[in-house]
Image (cartoon, rainbow, N blue to C red; front, top):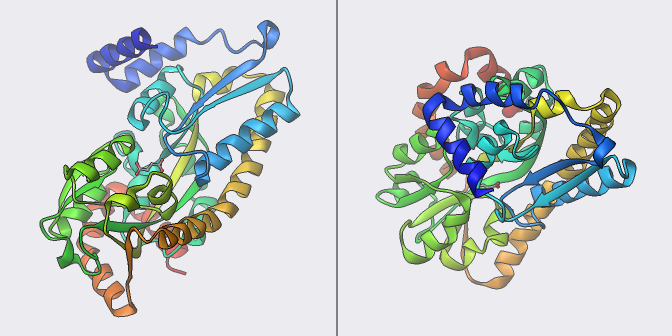
Length: 342
Ligand code: SIN
């Protein structure tokens, strides 16, 4: 693994991800063949098994192995035990793993289209994000990173993001001067700068320690991630801001996907659609359960935004929308707005 990964990194630094993907396409043109045993889908992800993504990944494995015994095997590696998200994007493009479910924010280096998901206060809730993802823009969104050898096959929710830090972050001013951990996204960077904070892009697996040691003061995440990764133990205040959406592109390596026998690919897509609907139904409940557990722990105080505070936040964030509207594209932004604000 180490040798292959360093070869990937070396090739990527010389030729870029797209050149790498073309090479991989040639190398894997011989295709998947189950005559030597089941087709293997390696599926690494960074969250805990009980999170919305962890539950959906485990259900995908269960249904595939139940319905396609001896034909397809799925190995799920949760909690970042195999690799972090950034490495998993390269590993997927290179064909070292076959499936990932990575935060849409972290694909910022491959497409500007997913920036729409990070615009603060655009999607009012998970149902709004779902309307956008399943509406007329669906195919364009799923295909947005195909040029990098990555095919989107579904969208999975985690939840709405909340702020956490050393003070209640009920107004943008409260965030002034705080060092915020963010995902690898330029929109999130602009969001924190607009609040007067200091954004630091950092892998998910490093966040707990960074909060504990004071390397960062604050962060934004869902209740499910805040609870399962114990961020609430090292943040005195959590603010129920619901200011942004955290969701995933469920994606496969394109040469691998095309090399599958037609009937296998179709059966997998049926299971993917079923698991996506099931997982997305669970997400709201999982986040509500995580919030209840955090409250019960008594470790963090929970602040809530009233309508007036929410309006101040949304108005303050409008320049962030202006900055990214051109790179996202007018049609996509309008489709998101039509779905997001209903
Ligand atoms: C995830 O939910 O997959 C990780 C999100 C993060 O990096 O904060």
